Figure 1 (tube, rainbow, N blue to C red):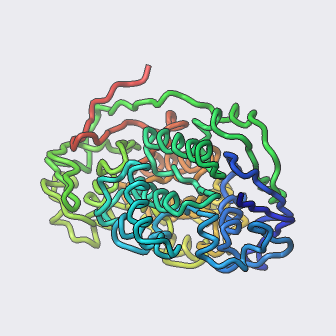
Figure 2 (cartoon, rainbow, N blue to C red; figure 1 turned 180 degrees about the vertical axis):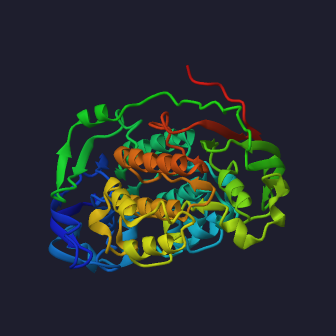
Length: 472
């Protein structure tokens, strides 16, 4: 049985910042289900990438120790042999794809393992069915939702047949129903096929009866320690709450009028009509692939639609794109797609330079926001070497500084621990209220939203549902 061991491992991305990992020793028990926890920026992704043999080959340096696969330094094992034994699902699935469709992606991955053709052709449908996306087998990956892309990436990892399956925030963009199903699948792989599962997740719901071991990365010491099941008590599980739309839509600047959306051969939305309340923060919900991100793309004029999207009773299509980009801002689902500079300070300086709220976003307020988001020590850091959660924080702050009248946040909470999520929501809420701005966010994470969300609308069965039951 494959063994994977981390031996007094210390790792640093660059000499100007402290080590990301310090003296980590860990040998996961083969055939076990392990949960790796820790706040944003504690080094979880770095540890998984190193255990998969990607670091330091793709950046950084080992300060001491090593990682061994079956007793051999993992960096000496050929990539295709390594993949047979250790599979990694990235936090951002877009960084993992090389082909156009799920079928082509899986075939490409399996061909790199030099497997026989009949084995390859059998594994592709098996893996797609296992994660519930066989109907998307020949769709272009670029047309899929974030959650659907994560399922494609998971199917690819499953198809490899690796003994160790490492999953970095695999459910960040996955709806609750799919999350529950995929967690059950991972448990089956562990129990029936004796796979070793290692998952990082900020949402601890559903793990209590699944995990054998819990490990925690200490953000202060950057070392690994065993955690007890008591950690679940710190995560308050609540029934999903619905947020009833407010009827007060007087002076509503943004309105949908019989809007329809189609992607490839899929109809996502028909005849959607809704006035977004002014000065409020809404939640747009719905299952993976229902059309939430596509609706945001339509509102920001990045994809075609039918019907009208009006701004102050004027068809927004008659507004020049440059002016429209200063009216509606879109916070992308993938933070890296939004950055145009290399360091935190340069990215924020650019937003400050072109801010529509220059008197609000003073140097003092920016410093306060950086402190609130625990980013003070990372102002000179390379954006591309930050953790996924830290990248999200920088992205959201940068877009808030731009100051558009209406802001669309596509999965702004993905990859954030609970404390970070509260910090981000608090900053969004304060900025909107102080400047009388409006916004809508997409999130599959519902815990902790109660005090920040004013209303909810939902996409289901190609319909925009605006009348939802209010939680008692």
